Length: 170
View 1 (cartoon, rainbow, N blue to C red):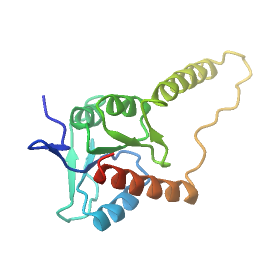
View 2: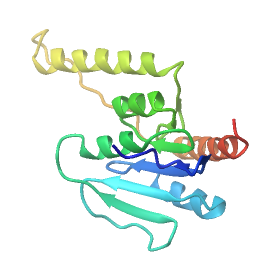
View 3: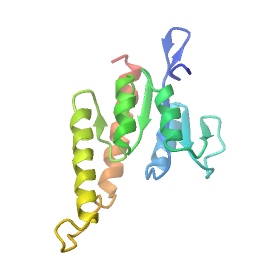
């Protein structure tokens, strides 16, 4: 089993792992990584454009179900920042000791991940009932709120804060 990327010869080094499929903040991650010198692994099921710079590495995994999530979860640990919008991957990464951020800058922690997983499950049940036409009226179907400039700003701030906290050893 792979060792967490954040461990190297007994010391912790910073690394950012990005669940890249549908990630709206890749450009922000690149900008922060360049400024801080933190390496980034962009993990996805298919190829797409990643800056051709030493700090950035694209990891293309198989197209199997959850292949990218599994790759990230196996390498998550102390010193690793995982960026994902996937609640179940966030749960796995938090349990491995990684710092986990949602695309909107919301940190996932041991204190809040259980509630996030429960809310996801309830939303999934609600969607299933709506799609099944449970009330026979075709209830309105809504998705997540549109991604806004405030979300990008909050993400940038949260990523900077997470990097600083890890560098200070907290």
